[in-house]
Length: 287
Length: 315
Image (cartoon, rainbow over all chains, first blue to last red; front, side, top):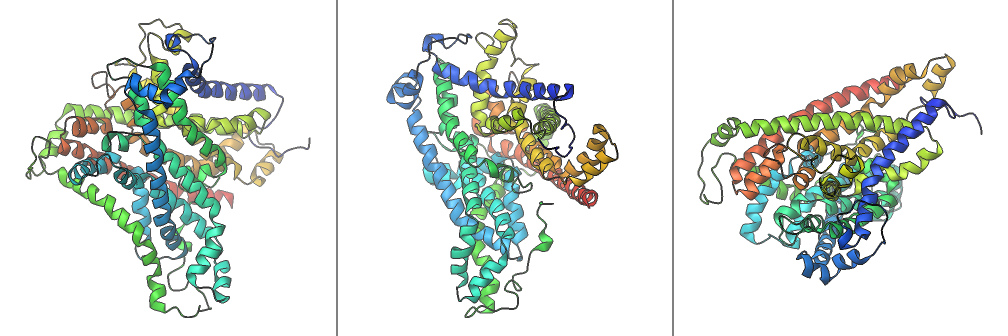
């Protein structure tokens, strides 16, 4: 193998290198163990749910239970309904964020206009504002105007999560897009709108996909909004209910529901891994 | 440096350069960005409205038992600032945010440097690194809660602690929550810093290697200054999020035992949603919002300076 450039810690096959590999291995044992444990617990039978051994006959029974009526009858947690409402609410929130966010991101990325910075800053401040500051009044408003426990209400409030993400990420994509391309289209007699839809939009498709998937992940993982603003809840709220507040706890069902609830974000995250860094830091750091 | 600089953006008027597209009046061109931003602005207002209303609550005695609230000036603030529970939750939140952010940053930087060695193991583990970060914090907290269980939790079993050792007891709960937080979010710091390390130019390192500089010297004098902006971005995001921690605390301990883990946002939740004291909760949140806002401002200033310095050392 060719001699590689030296970066700190890059020497190989030495004692420090072995120690470094062991250290990283240690982190990954720590990092993966809880996930492995959750999957194992989900595969155990009810009589084994309080055991700590690693050898057992795995069963998919718990998954069947949480995903069907059987779980609802047993635990009074309607997990299938929670999955459905989480899916509808999160998809709705992402679609609206895209419809509304793409034009705003384009405007902010292409032109510098009075108020553009304050619009962007306000969107960013949502990311850092304590959610309850908005939710407590919303809780009162929703109860008054009947938006409590509705999809419309959830889609609206989830904009707090999804909109800043979509607008901030896409703005940086539109900024990086060379304007010459649109200029050429304009000179060819395209209207601005057609130059946008035919030239600019297809070129930022990776950005749109990445921001949409990330927004979906964060909306899906959100806990406080459905906890306060709905009765029927969401996947995240339903999972905590399996733990049983005072009543009987179903550890293996909790674990099975946890696995099911964790799968969509994990699958989506792995498909957009290339864009994760940018998305997580709102484009402040490019991957 | 990729952190957005606004100076480079064009004005609304000069966007089409020397060529004028046909049939679009200058007035229409001038208003275009505003028109495009209208829908987003409407949603923004829709969310700012409750925020402003929440600020209004802090000057009322609004609660479920007081459906027709009246103005009590700074009464809520006096009540909050003289409440020992508030100061204890400030202390708990501060401890949590500082310890979690510092530990996560140090661990994250170490992991990023280790993964950057591009060994076989590093390549495989990079994919696995983000898993805890993408699982909902609530699910992570639920798994850990099961593992923390003194009777049948796996941790007490593995470490032979016996069933009397409780990870979530009054004096240990905060540290257990920090442990869960760093399990989830250390990868966040690591992948941001890793992206930063990978974007560093090679030349300065080669040059100083030729000069016979040792590893530690290169790390301290070259790598750290250039990486500092990336580390700071991670610190800003982590610290801000830690100040408003809710999910994992609420699932693991609900602020207990007693008030041992009542962070500001947990306390505000209990106040306003469980006890229906809307004004009390809103006051907590408004104070927290001011703290977060001022801290963010200072950190962003620091980031600007670090970027300027890093740009200087790269040149």
